[in-house]
Amino acid sequence: MAQRGSYAKGVAKREEILSTALEVIARNGYRRTSVRELADAVGLSQAGLLHYFSSKEELFTEVLRKRDDVDARRRDLVSDPFDALTDTISHNADVGGLVRLYVQLSADATDGEHPANPYFTERYATLRTTLTQAIAAEQDAGRLRPDVSAAQLATVVIATMDGLQTQWLLDPSIDMVGAVESVIALATTAEPHR
Image (cartoon, rainbow, N blue to C red):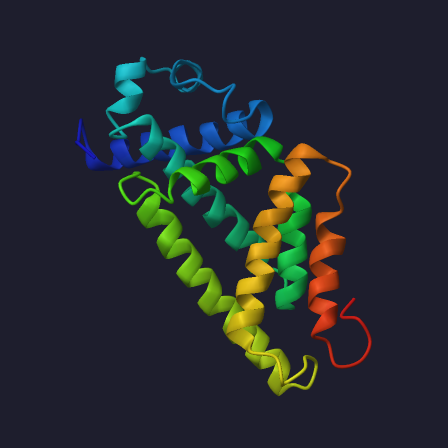
């Protein structure tokens, strides 16, 4: 990021851009949000906005990173790892524009040259590690079957969540939370988790 003015002002403006973009994209969606609209919302020209980001793709990738930060703060308030997952899924149903952005960029990022590729590669690795540890802890506590690989179950839960988002975008009647709870229940030792 090129610096203009003081460093603190640049960081603050970048944060303002990302926070505003988060709201606008959640409301309008990825395809119906233009760089011009985002620039207008923060009092910049398009060139001025792109001064803080090297491309539209980088801007939208950073919006997802900001979304992850906001979601992480909300999840930190929930002690049960599976409740944190279902809380995130429930919240996603309220921000369809961000879900659409995530689905679109995650598909685009499978191209190793896409600017979002490092973000998604790191995000999935971190999410698999974190969820694997949470599942292993639940297995150690006797709440999940010990004969299920924690790493494989984490991968399946993540794949289920991502696949459900795509299906939900096409058919909003799909119960994303219920479907993920069903997958988790398959690995539960006794009564369903919730």
